Length: 114
Image 1 (cartoon, rainbow, N blue to C red):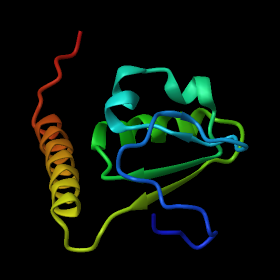
Image 2: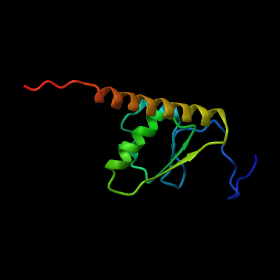
Image 3: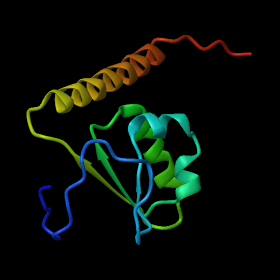
């Protein structure tokens, strides 16, 4: 096994979800995170590291972060110019375009006075 910078063996891609030994750290797969809508409330993390993030889960983290009294830090891990980065950036652009379309449509709505 290849050792990481701390001398511990590097984790393989097959990681079991749950707390890491001796640490208040959880490793959770995306599929596991989607199953539990109150995962963030249960774990109440101080740090969140997202690898291959999904926009829906990113928004959940943002809402939790806004409601969390303790400061929480969020980190993204992505390879530059990767398919994952392109997919995430495309999803963000589509979301932005949808909001702009709603704002533009609202400008043209007619409000009737009662």
